[in-house]
Length: 280
Image 1 (cartoon, rainbow, N blue to C red):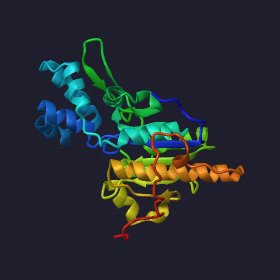
Image 2: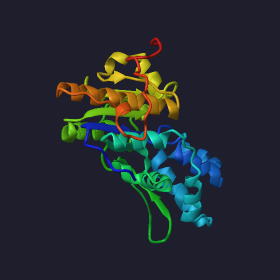
Image 3: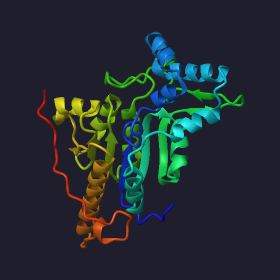
Image 4: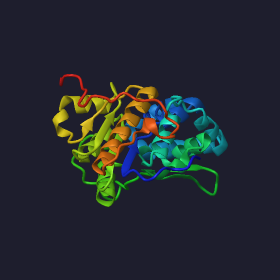
């Protein structure tokens, strides 16, 4: 792990599935271990999160071990520019967080495999761990069986409102400029919490992109889309470079990512703002 530069007062908050990795990790595990058909049969009868815990129980009963699941998670697809993007943002002094509706066991297993878990200050996700019997357990971030999270955004799943987490981050870390990256419907609520000084990076042609495109004026933050891992790297580091340059100019100096000894050494094009298709 490289040494982190001077803290830049920039917080980069990543979704995980279809953002850091290029798939849904729940589906990846189910598909590769042969449990997709059973999952799809049961999905109409119960919420996703409790169903994943039930699937872990079923796998355990059928002889699937924790190590079998770990080996599948190690093969989770990830674009080859994601890790350099994470390392470059970290080296630039950004505070990196994850805000995901996956689960901690899946996320940490993948991050550990790639040697990048320690680049993240905090992971906000559904609890996931291996119990004393060697069974993977998955629980909701918010226990909706006792009390709903009360968010009025219909796109938030019952087990997790990412907007609630984002509000807490903004309250506790509001001196930072926030950059939020996501792809799904559940990423809309935290995007709505961002301020004019912040940045929202929706993945193009994914659900979040479509929801924002239908009414981009609801988002106070500046919107910059991305398509794949290479695009994510270029856009993210361009935004970090721009924020750093602006902060340094305000202090009477100027220095960009391209001029310091970070791993990302080439100039990156500055993306235009509010690059969205016409609202439907």
